[in-house]
Amino acid sequence: ILGGASTVGRSTQVLLVNDDDRAAQVDLLVYGPDGEVVSPAGSGVVVPPLARSVVRLSALAPDQEFTAVHVVARTGRIAVSALQTAADGLIPLGMSALPVTQASRRVVIPDIPKVTTARLLLLSPSGQAEVGVKLLTAEGAITPVGLDSVSLDENRLEAISLTEALAGEAAGVVVTSD
View 1 (cartoon, helix red, strand yellow):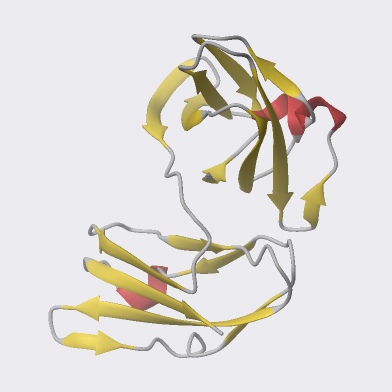
View 2 (view 1 turned 90 degrees about the vertical axis):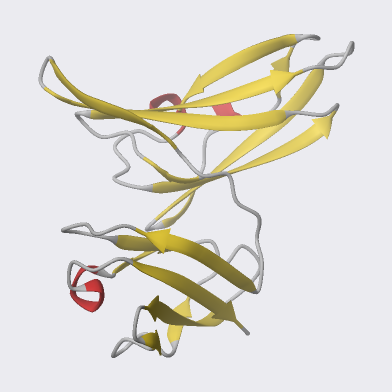
């Protein structure tokens, strides 16, 4: 799950659903810009049979602007989703579902709509990696300056701004890794 936050005004809930007739046990590993966030509360979370559990990201990794959460089932099968809410004081600003992703050497994000700001979150869970980023625009594929080769450290979440490269236009994104 990419993009969850636990800062003032942003709250993320990880939803764990067990549709089996046996309890499931999972570990939630959280990664931030400084690497893995060690959290005993994320280890051995039990989800009862035919039930769901909600885990607040703030209980696992407080004060994180952005995170990646890796859910590992020790026993049983789990469906995972996440919801993020934003507020300005007591005024709700909205809610969004966060994407559940799989580690891969090639990822295609088919559409980033016209927005004023955009960032790409990248994590290498198994060692250092070099990644390249291309934008799929109406004029064709382009490689933004400085994004042809980006170094990722193991288990450190990297946020790359796409705001300037997108220039307010919609585009797809292709990320490739060595």
